[in-house]
Image (tube, rainbow, N blue to C red; front, side):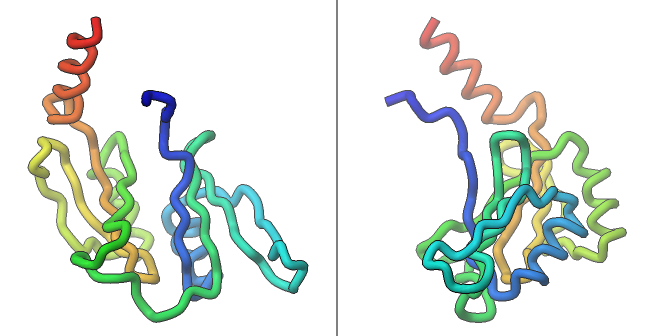
Length: 148
């Protein structure tokens, strides 16, 4: 099956919606696209859509239970990766916004630059700059040659 063309959105359950919106909108710079009310008609926000690109979104669902996302070894989504054009520029912006790196900039095993941050709920976020000699781009070349 080859019908899938992208990840349209990632949904995160967050404990404190205002705290998460401050992080994702005010510090990381995502635009709030829309809010949906609870489908049962009860008062309050059901989810908030944040724009990553025109066809990729982050959904924030409030009223999460617990103080932190599951640890690295838990069976769950392990992390979200955000692609950037200039990782050094992003690191400088993160520093200005007061967002500490949880893993400093390093060359990943896939030949891409990466660093890591946590959101207020402990969700891990990889920041990656795709490099010309990355394993991903090499694999794409092989796949295209194979299907040609």
